[in-house]
Amino acid sequence: MNRIVIRSSEGEYPVLCGRGLVGRAGWLARQLPEDRTGVFLLTSPRVWRACGRTLSRALAPAQTRRILFDDRETAKELRTVERIARELVRNGADRGAVIVAAGGGVVGDVAGFAASAYMRGVRLVHVPTTLVAQVDSSIGGKTGVNLKEGKNLVGAFYPPELVVADPDLLSTLDPRQYRSGLYEVVKYAMIADPLLFDVLERTIERLIRRDDGVLDWVVARCARIKGEIVGRDERESGERQALNFGHTIGHAIEAAVGYRGILHGEAVGWGMLGVAEISREMGRLRTEDAGRIGRLVVRLGALPKLPAPGAIAKRLGSDKKARAGRVHWVLARRVGEVEINADVPDELVRETLGRLGRMPKDLAAGAAKAPRREIS
Image (cartoon, rainbow, N blue to C red; front, side, top):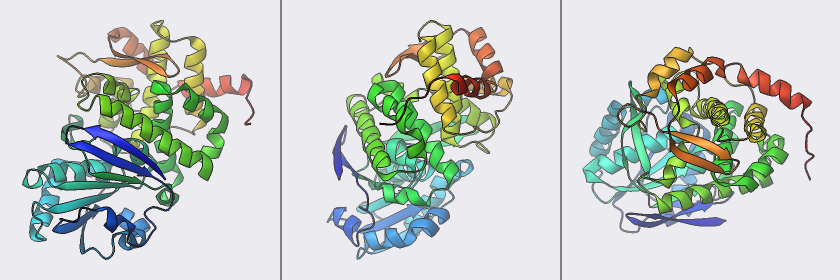
């Protein structure tokens, strides 16, 4: 088991990464605060169907009440938080309650926001059940919901008391959901870890097959990177903004399709292709490195169809990272290093969005011609 300690304004909390952690009878209940007055498991119907028996065993013998809610991106809104709060009241939750958020990014964001607001804050534990949640969204204290105008525009920084990332829980994910999380793994390699990027280039097919050794190493590696970054910049005033690599375009794509039909990681995959091209065009990134980024994204599988370039461009200005209507970009400088708060000419953005949909085909053709390094 890997134990990664995260620093926050509320103190330190651990991220525990290990296969089989949640499967141990009563194990999770023993990690919860002793002075709790109630345990409330917040999850979705589909997570409960896939992992309910495991979660029940992990929380026994604690008296746990279950609250289910829709974990589709379209349900990530304020009225879902209100419904959860009303359920907590009806079930007798007081200020000594502990909320256990078990699920993917939507469950973590919504349940975390509910925990931050209910009675001005109750205890929170994350049990992420998707790859994107285990390597990214469950760590760092970001919570929130979407508005029609943009993604995660209403929320709070609210650190949990514990995160338990068990790769065994990923076995229930369908292939598309699992691959969606791999785009976030590529992001971590790109912003902070050339070694991780090199490992991904050599082992990406094994990772797609969910090879235990590669997957366990990747989950812990990404969690540690995220923990180090948010420990130095909890409120996203500086270094943490690097985590938005690929997300500026990605969030605009999600908003343009009404959060339907494109998963978050897939939108980030498109976003990384676009921002790598912008970085290359602006002379920040070598053509060779831009090609490496693009080919790795393409090797993860086919990306869903994009909305019209104009629809994406229209949503860019409403992204929460914009300042006074200007988008501040995270550009690539080399594998493992990015530039934060860069200005990009509007014309270059429009040109890049116009040819973004053709990039995977062009990169795949280039990858077929490029020499492949063998896995050692």
